Image (cartoon, rainbow, N blue to C red; front, side, top):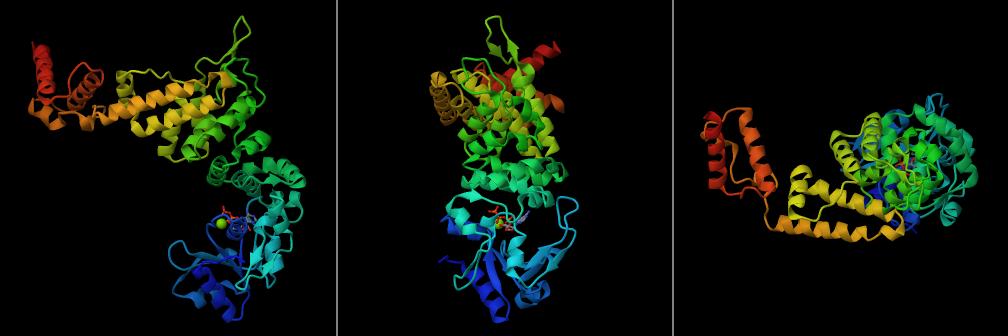
Length: 443
Ligand code: ATP
Ligand code: MG
C-alpha cells in the first residue's frame, strides 16, 4: 500500500468526512507505484470547487477555478481538482469548456496516459479502469481511450508522452506511438513556452537516447533544424554515427542539466550546411560551430529561452570544437574570457562530444582531464584572471588622472597583460605601467 504524505492524508480525510469522494491521482501515484520518489501530489474529488474552498479556508487558493482546481496548504500546496469531463477541443490545446461530474471513472477517462489515470484513496483502494497498473508493469505508455483523438484534442500530450518515455524509460505502445506521430503537425498550435518546458523535460530524462533516435520526425515539428541531420553521413574517420545519431548519443552522454543537454542537442546542427568532401572522399565541416550557433540562436529565441541560459548555451555551442592548449597561459586566457563556471561546462560538452565519436579517438578524454587539472591548479594558485582579482581598482586610476571610459579600458589592458604573463599582478608595478603609458602618450 502507498504511503501518502500527511498533508495529503489530511485533505482526503477532511473531504471524506464532509461526505465527498476523494482520491490521489496522476504523476505522484504513478511514481510511487514505480518505487520512485513522487513529486507533487494531486487530489481529485467529487466536491465542487466552492466546497473545497470553504472546507479548507483560509488555506485554500482558487488557482484554476475554471478547471475546478483549488490549491490547498502552504508551500507549493496540493492541487485539489473536482472530478471533471472535458468538452470539445477546437484549438488542439484546451477544452472549450469543462463540466464537473460525480464520476471518478469519467475523470480518469480525460487523463492522457493509462499510467497517469490510476487513483488511490485513503484506505489504499485502487481505481484503475484503463489498466494503468498493467502498463506500469509492462513499462509502457498507452493513451487512455482512442489515441488519435486524444492527441488531436491536446497536442501537448505528444510531448508529454515523449517526456515520460525519456524520464521513465518506458516504451510507447505501438498504436499510441503511431497516433502520436500522425498528430505531430498539431504541435504548431502549442505556445512556445509550453513546448520549451516539455522539450527540456525530454532532454533531461535519463532515457533520452531512444526517444531522440526514434522520434526525430516528431521533435522536428517544433525543431525543423534537426531534420537535415537525420541520416546525414559524416564520411569521417572521427565518426561512427551519422550527425543525428551522434547528436543523440552526445546528448545522452552529458549530465542531465538543461544547459548541457540543450547544448549537445544544438552543437552540430550546422554540419549539413557546411559539409565539404575533399579529394580523398573525406568529409569536413569547416566552421560548422558558427552555423550551429546561428541555428541555436534562432531556436532558442523562437522557444523564448531565458537570456542567461541562452547566452551560455550559445557560447558552449560556438566553442564546443575549440582546441585545448595545455599551457597555463592558455588556461588563464580561457578563464578570463569565459569564467570558471562556463569553462567547466565546456569541458563536459567536449567530453560528451568525444564519447559519441569513433572509439579510436577516446584518448581525447585524457587531454580534457589534463586540461581540467591544469585549470584547478591555476585557480588554486590564486592566479589573476578577472578584473576583481586585479591588484588595482578604478579609483587608483582616477587618482592618476584617468577619466570616463579610459578607466575601464586601462583596467582591461592591465588584466590582459597580467593574464598573458607580461606583467606581475602587483599594485606598484601596475600603477607605474599606467603612469609610463600616460607619460609616453603625453610626450
Ligand atoms: P509530472 O511528474 O511531470 O508532474 P504528472 O503526470 O503529474 O507528471 P501533471 O502535469 O502534474 O503531470 O498533471 C497531473 C495529471 O493530470 C497527469 O498525471 C494526468 O493524469 C493529468 N494531465 C495533465 N496534463 C494533461 C493533459 N494535457 N491531458 C490529459 N491529462 C493531463
Ligand atoms: Mg504532477
